[in-house]
Image (tube, rainbow, N blue to C red; front, top):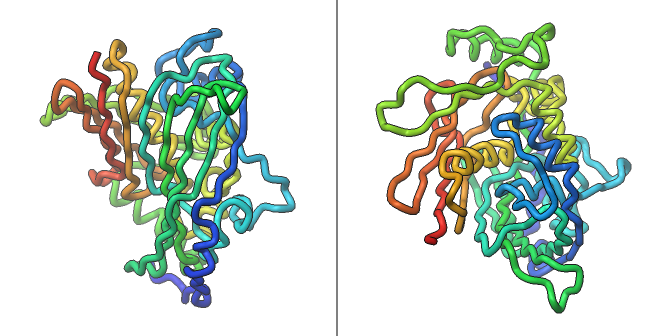
Length: 328
């Protein structure tokens, strides 16, 4: 497929962005059980009953502290426009590049939690696809309503990457790309318009020669829409198929990076239920789409370390992660 010409060269004003370094904001939320019940129903692997005082599974805190930007402040892609807390990077494509976590103590159902977010770094690079801007935001979570007495529980570093506008893609080019992808994978699109919403999403893999634990997944539009709704994520690449394919140039809907990271850490939670996480980090390598299956893998490399990865339908690693288990 030969894409059309790209849009105009964006304005890169790295000096102006430095004014956003160190900027911070604090929000408070109560970890009510409703969002956790919704996540459990959406992921639907190991049922989780969010009873008062129960530890919140790792990364499920993303169902809270949601940025509820008014509709008039949203950009074309469904994300809030920049220039308020985040710097006004003039690159239109925003993706979650990865995250790092240090767990000090569990967040629990019913806790009042403060999250202080601080912009730690802004870096401009030139890549094969054009300009790239990386923004790292540190989130510090503390349990308690009063700032002076709140107890540290979790620190998270969130890496965001901004990229240039993709080449304009015609409907014919989109159809050609999808057809080529389906032919290459030798499978039909698993979720046609008449496919039931309760189609099987996950199951065990065949034996893995490397000895890894493996779980096979197939995302569908209902899963992606429900996760978008639970996390108040308006990014259209996850639920708006015409936008994702005809504007962004993807062959299908994009599976959320945070969802993939959560599925991997849930594999650790269910396979090593007696162990607690000390830290966890993941890095996105390639997008995963709803038109093809993918698999989750976990392999314990030593007594306290688990290596994890997402493998796409072509056998490529789409995301890599490492979980360090707490020493009792």
